[in-house]
Length: 242
Ligand code: PXP
Image 1 (cartoon, rainbow, N blue to C red):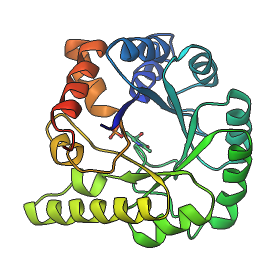
Image 2 (image 1 turned 30 degrees about the vertical axis):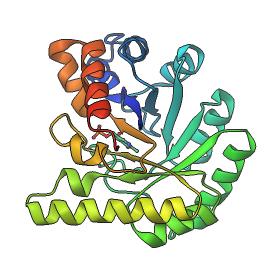
Image 3 (image 1 turned 120 degrees about the horizontal axis):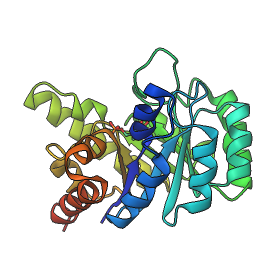
C-alpha cells in the first residue's frame, strides 16, 4: 500500500497571513504523525511565502517519519537541504505568481540546471524525486538524470471536468507508472487529491507514496489534524490495490 505524506504548507500559509506564530506547522507535523501519516512534506519556497527557515530546521529535528522537502533546484535552497538532510527532496517548478505548484517540472528543458542539483543531493545520501507530468519523455529523462523517484502530477485527473478527460488522465498516470517502473524509478503521486477523488488513484498499482495537502488541512479545520489524516489513511487502506 502507498505511503501517505501530509503536506503541511497550508498551515504556515494561515500563520503568514498575520506574520505571527500560530498556527505552527511543526505542531501540525506532530499531530499528523499521531494520525498515522507515513511522511511529512513541506515546501521551502524561495519567496518564503509559507514555510520559513525556522520551520524547516525544527521539522528536520523533530519529524519521526519520512521527511520530504519540496524545493526548486536553486543554489540557496539546495544548500539548506544539504545542511538539513531530509530523507527526500522533491524538485518542483516554482513561479512567484502561482498560487500553488502548477504542473510538473520540465526536466528535459531545464536539464543543465537540474542535473547538478540532483547529484549534490544524492551524494549527501538524500533520495531525490522529480515532480513531473506523466509523459514518457519526462519519466525516462528523470531516470537518466539520476533521480531515484518521480512524483507524477495528478492535477490533470483532479481538475478533469468530464468523465472522458478524467479517464484519459488516469490512463496517462497508468502509463507514467509503467515507464517509471521499467526504468527503475520509485513512483509517487500528488496534487489536487481529495477525500472524494482519491479512490481510483489509490487503487492503481504502482504508486509508492501520495503527497496530499490542501484537502487534508481543509478537513482538519473541522475535525482536527489527527482525525483528518486518519480518515485519508483509511481511504488509502480501503482502496489499496489487491
Ligand atoms: N506534491 C507536490 C510536489 C506539490 O507541490 C503539492 C502542492 O504543494 C502537493 C503534492 C500537494 O498538493 P495538494 O495541496 O493539492 O494536495
